[in-house]
Length: 605
Image (cartoon, rainbow, N blue to C red; front, side, top):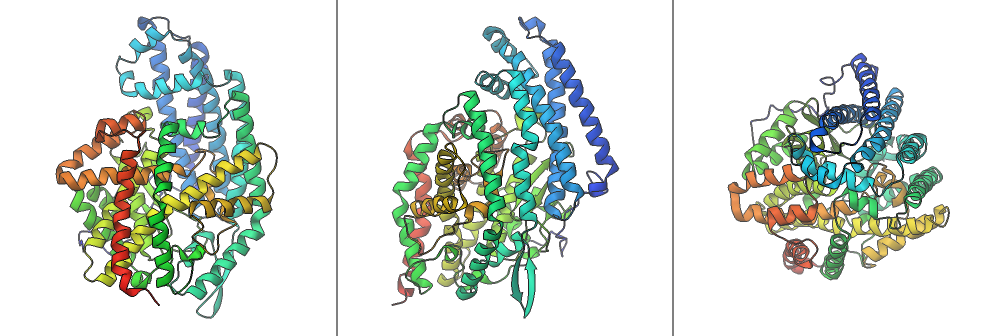
């Protein structure tokens, strides 16, 4: 293990370096006040700026773009801070108020952008093309051109501004209701003979216990706990989706996938080819699920068995050991990635403590003004927790290598963001499997690695199918709780090829991704990232240490081109064709084939 870290590591993050005082921070209050003034200044400047009709007449627009990037950075800093406060302590009553203030400022910012977009669309095409060749705009040409093209497909500025204003208490308000509901989530379990109330994040970690009877009992309680919250969740999901659908209808957008594809800078053909290839290859992964069922002594896996540990994978890995393991493996690929991770651990950029009151899940968020990131998770000592930690560090490193770039050039999409994080996971998982000293140990580690493929190929696919079908029904009216449960189970059966004995009806309530308003369809980008990173990892293994700088170049380009161009430039592949996706599936299939060979003699008769 690496010994460069100062052990033991602190498992709570430090937010004081940004705005001392938490939700009572005077510095943050000042930040919001100055941000409000800067947004107002941008709005005034937008009103006074006309669309340039010649290349020589662009100084006012250049100044406007400079102020825009200033505001983007400051909004991001504020949003990251309140997001951390809310995740860290869901009983902090002031944090949601601050979040509301940030959302209001962001709405004002978006409203001003509708008029800014009108300036862009008013520039003649020839002037626009010439303008983007000039510095400093050349570095953000892709982002500006993207804004201009999308603006032509939206409503007039006044209507778009009204939508953004109404979204604060409408669209985003329903998301806030869900977050408040989750904040009140509590599940009673018995620990060492005592009744203990667990938060959603703690309860979810408990579902992965090795004891199957305990696992099934906990899952029943988990489902019941979400049943108690189902009406609130259904209300939030229905109205959030209704708002989104009405906006799309007004804009004349017929496909529910149009916005998420545009956000992810991805062609619909690429998305369809990716899912088609995955679906055609699911047979082998169903065989894996059936084999795991036999190893657990059951005819078919229940939903809660899919991620269940085999053998010693249930043993605890201390936070310090997990951190050392991650850095040790990162160093084999990239000393720069390892150095960044060491800094994150040492400087307390990570909130990992297992305690009540935290929101579920994990995330990485950046503070662009400070040039730092913060990672949030609840570390329970499982191998899956180590993977999550590596995953979030991958996110952080992605942002780290782009810190010196203009604000608009740093705005990369979720699917390529998931590429960097999943790639970091692969480095750790593959190295750990290869280092196994016995077949039994290798089986356990392979199984943990395969679980991620199952998640991306089946679990995420179920989410995509559910959400697509839900929006189709929601366009006809409100969808009941009972129907939401049916849609969820139907999607899971389809995605898992009906390989399970039971499913998770309330998954739509338990998964916060369905309630995200910043990125609709918070699902398929994960699978894209997993598959894309598999291709990158194969290239890294092939080229060795020389690939590190190429990898950094790829990451720095993620905010400046669509994914098809990115893949062609850095990997030389065509994402609209099945070949690349098949090669990515084949990598995961190799793990399954090895697992099947190693477990052949262990199947219970």
